[in-house]
Image (tube, rainbow, N blue to C red):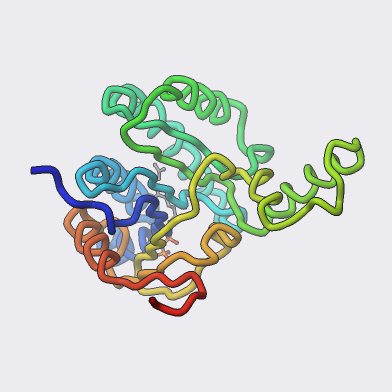
Length: 239
Ligand code: FPP
């Protein structure tokens, strides 16, 4: 019998926090935690179809993460290159469409090429939509979108009087994605850290204590189930 996923979240977004602490607790360097975190991404993406989750968006690297040590930043960039190279075939075989959001300008050419290739390779995949936020910041995204919108006004393509809240999302990196229904942050911190600021205006939030490398498909299933019991009103009064 088909599962009733009608009340489940269609789009789940995750702030994968706690890799550093997880590694420190084990007396290992922070990058050890990031590698363990990358393995969780695989498990969580695989779990999505059965849970009725059609879109999953993960925060891999923020516009603020450049402030970390050079060793950690270089290690993360190398991990992203490795992840894409190693996972590309499996993602394609599992019918996962991969997209990247964020500003690519500060990323190295080799990584950008790999991102482009993975987007191209998976462009016809339909089972799950995985979006990886890399050098992403919500404010930065809105600023870049506003700049493009202003350019269209200057070119006469867009009239200022027609700009409303439907207009800006068409310029955001996420323009082809629905807004997230559920945003999860691991590791006990209760803040959104510049993630999907515009898009999560009406999202439900789950702040959980689990450190990201300990997160599992079972925990995602529990959160999806608990989301189904929530009453989303979008500002209206219940019927
Ligand atoms: C936050 O933990 C995590 C990050 C900044 C990096 C997230 C990256 C991964 C999970 C690696 C895999 C991702 C992909 C797409 C392959 P933290 O370092 O801030 O942890 P802490 O708060 O305990 O220090």
